[in-house]
Length: 199
Image (cartoon, rainbow, N blue to C red):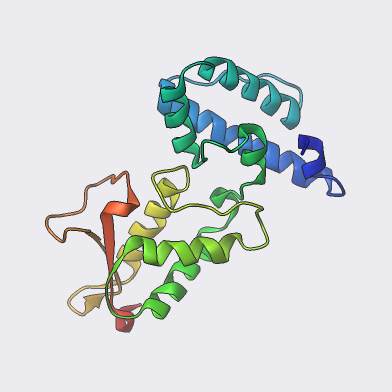
C-alpha cells in the first residue's frame, strides 16, 4: 500500500496529523537510540515525515542490531514496513488524559480486587482506546506508549490514595519486593494491586 492510499477519502487535516504524529514517533526513537535530535526538513507534514524517514533508513542500513533497537522503541515487528506501520498506529498522545484514565479505572473494576500482572490491566485498555482509531494493535511493552501510560498510572495512584483508608490503584514489582523504580522501563516487570472500594 502506498502512503497516499492510507488517507484516500479522508480529510487533509487527519492526514496531516497522522504524518506529524508519525514524525514525532520517529524523532523520539531516534533520540533514544542515537542520543541526538533527528534533523527534519520539509514544507508540510508529509514532506517532513518522508525526508526524516529516508534519513532513518540510511542510518539503519546494514546495522541490524541498531535497527532492532530502533524498531523496539517504536513497538514495531521486524517485518513491519517502517513508513506505513507508523502511519497506521493510533497515537496515545492524541487521546485525552481523562479518557485514558477512565478506561484504566473501568478495567480495574472488571479485574476486581487483588494483585494482577500489569499487562492484564493495560492490554484491554489499549484495545478499547484504539478500537476504530487504528489499523494496528497498540502493544503493551517498553515502547513509545509506555512513558505516557506510566504517567497516567502514577496519577491514578495519587488520585485513588485515600490516606488511612486504602488505595485503589498501586503499582508493584512483579516479584513483589521493594519499591517500584521511579522510572521503570518495562511494564512486563510490574504488577498492580487493585482495591475497587477505593477507586
